[in-house]
Amino acid sequence: MSEPVAVIAVYRFKSSTDEAAIRALLVEHRATLESEGLVTDRKPWVFQSFTDPLEIVEVFEWKDEAAGRSVEKHPRVLAVWQKFAALCDKVGLSLAKTAEAAAPFAHFKSWRL
Image (cartoon, helix red, strand yellow):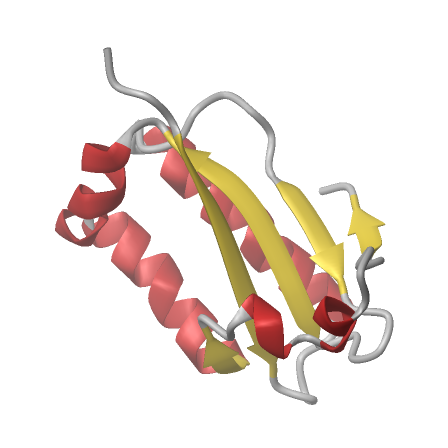
């Protein structure tokens, strides 16, 4: 039996991007991953940096390793990722580079989408 794979994605949005646009894109991202059958039914956790509110951490699960590897074969997912590229200064920022990561117990603002 294949096991889910946890993903921690960190995005740094451009300063011109408002919170409503960020939230809408994250909702679209999740809906697209679900519709393509790539993720588990566990709802994602989304966190916002207190130090830099433009840094967003999204935690979700691929349904298995194969789903994560196959994602680039899904045009609808790639279209959403293009939207991330347009709205972000950095997609795939290292979690270690967030200001909160320096603390032994990192605290982020928790979002509900």
